[in-house]
Length: 299
Image (cartoon, rainbow, N blue to C red; front, side, top):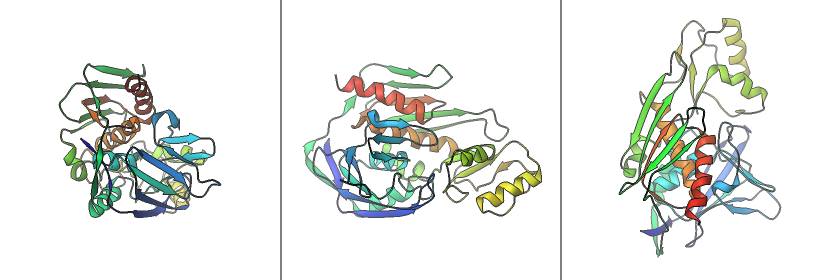
């Protein structure tokens, strides 16, 4: 397996999920053994570091990498696209502490990568070949199991105490299907989470255009109206539970959790040959697992 980079640069722009400001990011070809590196062009000295699990600083509503002044959040969708499309070397230049949320999925990144194409490089890519089972659990119901397999597979099950989203599963048995079956699955949140997240100064750039909003616990209509005004959106009938966003797949939330795992485990810094099975995953569990894997592969 050879290392690969993109054939030419491309740019994306859009609001940050948490900051809400307009962000520009440019993905450029990179030399062999570069890895996936992110450069903050808006900071003095333009600090640049490889996107690896040891830099994970926070996982509230996204994966945040940090080292000194260098901080980049919401990296998981971009990382998933690069990993799934086979990109092992790439330099990302971004002018803010966040990757643009775009439509809340990895679709736009994948489309650009397919458009510009890949350049196969001369050096071999280092790969982690799973030879014995590995398991990570947080003791709170979330588990990631990785077992030997002759190629990369991921299976995810999510469970929520929700009238609308209870239990869902998604599976990817061929990485070539990522572009059509997983990449356009969007991030999601419950309506009841929005006010607390806004109070924390998060999701300033979130709306029903870049996230699936799930309304599963009834609130008074006047509360719904006030929340809609705060988000700058038309009011919603508070008597009807359900998805406030039209779904792209019946199990889109589970598919997005699978997308997140692909992106978070890409912080291992190398392709994985094995089967990943996750129950109730999340960025915290995914990246904690990845940190342990980094210690294993670097022995």
